[in-house]
Length: 273
Image (cartoon, rainbow, N blue to C red; front, side, top):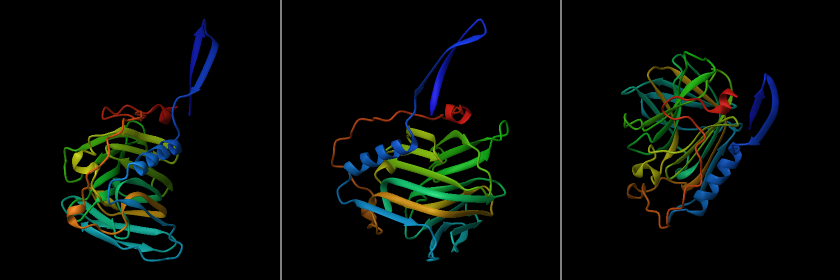
């Protein structure tokens, strides 16, 4: 992304200067991967799960709250049909258990109330952390409200402004996490790049799986064409006492800069440029 400065004198543009001011999504995710791969906790390994759903191999979605189902037919369709305690929580049974990693998903959705999301670090007792698309903004229908939240803790959330999602339109969403660092990109636009208290001490070293989230109102449907889950952790479900690991290395300095709006709802320059 090129951002420039323009000097004006007596109504005439006299200078134009431009420079590269933001790293690309690919570069940021590469940095994050290098960070968690070189600081792997004891007992963890590199794990991955990739699907394009062309083989029509079944994909089991286990609903911890609410109800729904997943069907495969040249893509994975996840129907979120009902809520329990205002939540539908569906966990992908074959997804790896990650402490740090990245999710790369190409998807579309339909939902009368918008409000759809994806989960990471979900385990038997908790839905994990949700990356949620809330609603299109009433003041500008090109923008939407996005949220990172611990669904079991109503006070642990952060909202920010990103692009609005159109229903039945295909998008590529990527999100990466390591310790308290979180990066989110929609297509190639970085919409969140921060160290966040959402990934507190309770969460930053914990292991969990990938899943789907719906709240407020059902039904909703998420259709996935491609899915890649990579990171460090365990390919199989760990024993309960190993959900959390202690890091045996000295915490490295943060080398990332924030690229996104915070709770105040300001809009990233890249979105309005």
